Length: 254
Length: 95
Image 1 (cartoon, rainbow over the protein chains, first blue to last red):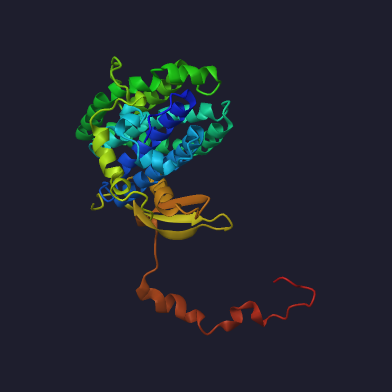
Image 2 (spheres, chains in turn cyan, green):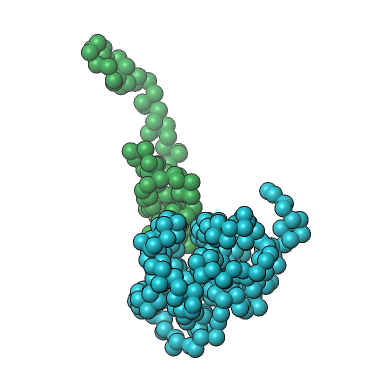
């Protein structure tokens, strides 16, 4: 795979695509292992929504790249340093409480982001966002519902989700840490303003945490750069599994 | 992956073209809200419906199979209860 182009629009679309793809792949690790049959399907449904979003976005990215590539090449033949997902989504699942906390933090962000992108200056992105926003509303409902149940549940469930929140919170700073790509997209009338997005996200998260009797951790400095291709060690292991088939048998089809 | 100790709910779905909710199956959930979410996830993955009802299985009163003779047999020889014995006027097309 050649080096990624510096085109900010391509990079912006890949950030959205990879965030959905990697979170979808992470969630699918629960299939067959969730605490109940009903949750197994619930989590798998969310994973499928996210992978569906990733397919649309990666197809668009391939089109923007203009090399005649495909969504599959982008998903299965890029190395970790060429993935531009948020660092938060590549973090391991942990227990079910950990997974639903991560889901709430990401889904609430995606909901505000897709809501804004529906009316952005890029018509294709606006179409994809309009489809994704309905799916994401349910992801927020599902994850918030579980965070409240576990947070306001037993002493053990409360301690576990509070612990998950404390572990995952530092990664949320990256969600709103704009760089040159975001600045170019804001200037082009595509990306929403990060401060406005953060206020909406914060209000939504605070409401859930209050109902869940959880304490919002203090914001941490910003050491994560997943959206620039600098990842935690977890992504490499994940890609090794996700990409194995296409790497071992190039061009293999279902 | 054994089912947690959650109560059983019965699920009823109204399809896009249907007029009434039909029983489609059951699932486990801790309360009605979770049962609705589970029903959405388990029973509407293929556009099966536009409305969901859930009810605790324990809240449904069912007839006893042992009562079947007393309940249903007496209707067997009363075919005159079917409307097929009425003469339908020519003008009525769609009955």
